[in-house]
Image 1 (cartoon, rainbow, N blue to C red):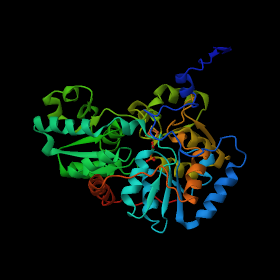
Image 2: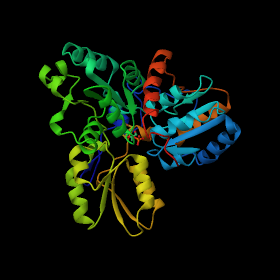
Image 3: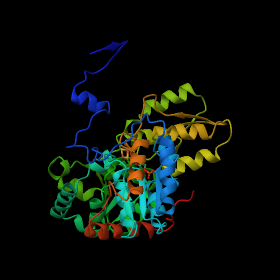
Image 4: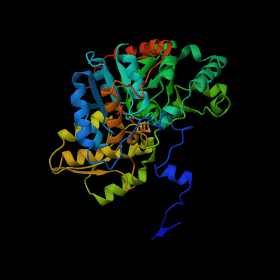
Length: 398
Ligand code: 13P
Ligand code: SF4
């Protein structure tokens, strides 16, 4: 074990190497094992190889890049956007045989649901999952619904499921008359849901559900209860289930959940006059302390419209904040928290994996294809179509 200053490097055990990103655990990391030869990150030809593979594939391939992706990957994206916009972009590109999704697993699933059967969706690293989506397993959600039925409230409850969820959860939502939502249309989704029933089961992000219900719909915190899937009946009494307006699934984003109200206070002291703009996946107290709240696309358009010379502290993923700071040198744009806050699963997609996926396609080999089974795809599509039918919900623009 070596020590530099106050930092002690872990020993070179398999676990330590795994934490350092130098090993793989095939049991927990789906698809980390890359058949063939994954290019080395230090290969000086990587950029040229990516360009050559994309040129060889031409119109047959369409590369989508989520805003939280690394710069080295975004450089090769044909379009960038949030998860909703990217799913729509994939659907609007029927001539492309291959959709290479540089994002995380649930996004690639949504793209597979919205594209034709002839189009193949590829996730360059299958280990690019999402900890929030993983917090709601279909067996847990089905058990929750049975408990709501036993309490006599399932018939008057409408499921609303955030885009950041597995296809099976979206399918559950479609089967039970609910809707999918994104952070840009969560308000319209909840308004629609309260026209259909008395209460909402909001999955899987408790913070987006609470923030939207309280900030945008004027409900009180007392109208919200948190359903813990690891406790009998979610840890709630029958009376609590009956009187709640919002039953919030106990899930959160491990990136946005790290911002604190203290970081807002700290940045206001450090930069007088700073505007604090945060994503609604942040905790409620952070949203209350901020000046503005909005989805990834909203954050981008707000900074585009901001006055030169203005100062902004942004509470969302670090790759995007760094890119926005570079794009707007006339504005002071800082990251809300001093600690590093990359989304580790988004970062799994790097240039070596992208090159590996593209070069295999050139050779006629399809690797890491994401497919949703026909039943889930059908039922999830019902919930996605319901979202698209909401008043005022359209595909976000560039
Ligand atoms: P959007 O892509 O919808 O902005 O969601 C943020 C996020 O956390 C994506 O993983
Ligand atoms: Fe999931 Fe949060 Fe990462 Fe988005 S930023 S992929 S919600 S863990």
